[in-house]
Image 1 (cartoon, rainbow over the protein chains, first blue to last red):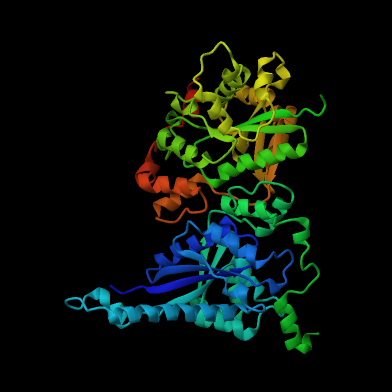
Image 2 (image 1 turned 135 degrees about the vertical axis):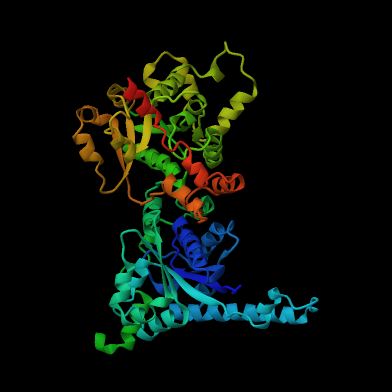
Length: 269
Length: 277
């Protein structure tokens, strides 16, 4: 039996706050990849963006991480990673991918070392083969279809990063019934070239819980129960995180990637 | 007292096969809506799963459906499950369920009646269900003041409202009594046809003040049909239903191609009843 490729799903984003929809993306992606017969999804990672991203209404990473942790308490395969949020500055997505890929290689190496030190069992069984010839894990970026669209936004992404993301890593892109991400792929040379590495998953059960709407509801004292885990709702209430004031944070500021790339490309001024 | 708010109880009828986060959301949306009007106060939500005699395709045993709904609302301070409808041996019209619950609201609160011998545990239990209620509704029920009886309204999605138009599914006089004596709270997605539907119906138009339309801006179309489909295909339903419901379904292996075939070819109870009348 051909062994499946171990796969890690990484979702980058504000998670401001985390919602049931975010977690649903992971479940959908995992089901889809398992159905291909080629992959074994071993881990899901949520990587909340750094505060320096400068997005309007972005509350402190400390809170966003805490909320994600609470939400994922009951998940046995998805976890939150604070690395990106702990960096000094905003980090490009490709760098976050590189970091987590290296980490997964390291943990694979660690497992290899453990196996080497174990006494070999009688007879080499099929099960021990993967440790002699380990299948390298793959790390893919999990996202929504709107994310694909952002590749077109001027100065938001560097060309070579888009290329590296789809070529070296790959995308798992969840879209609603009615939207056509294949179109965006068609419109981009890079995406078209590596479309075999872009997995399109259709979400038939509409569940578009946008975090922005959640924040609006919270500001107005409206209920978000059953859209966001109860533990997260309690946390938000306890710390009074989302207010009219928090929503005005970074108002009028440019997003960090736009600032960065503007200085890199003086021709665009 | 001009500041006194009208108390409202929401009743949701349906298959709840299984209950989903969307069903639970309907209650939250309706409650927020009424509170924002400043005129109403929602004091209770009731989930009334339909009886097995409804004969809908894929409808599993009421026992399971009631249990799942109870698990889902365990931590809710105001929404509860009522199994009166589901324990009837015959299918009951929605109007009859409304009348039953309305009657229950009219009769004096048993915990305050000095004539009834009630076990001591009961008052405690009631308090646990409604921890945040400061209004002494119990006291009001003792007085003959009819105005203080809460209004019972049918909570539903736009699909129920639009089903009023399906031949032989509803009795016209039932629809009239529902909107006239009780009222509807209809949750629908932005860009729906509900207003048009109300406009095109004389009965609904006449009582449109008693039909409260609530717009759901956060798209949340988690239909039970889709949940059952996902389960048959071994797909995850996490974060679409409460974790306890998902665990219960898994443990009891509730939904399968066989369960979906239940009542296949059988005529739905209301259609059977009204076509033969």
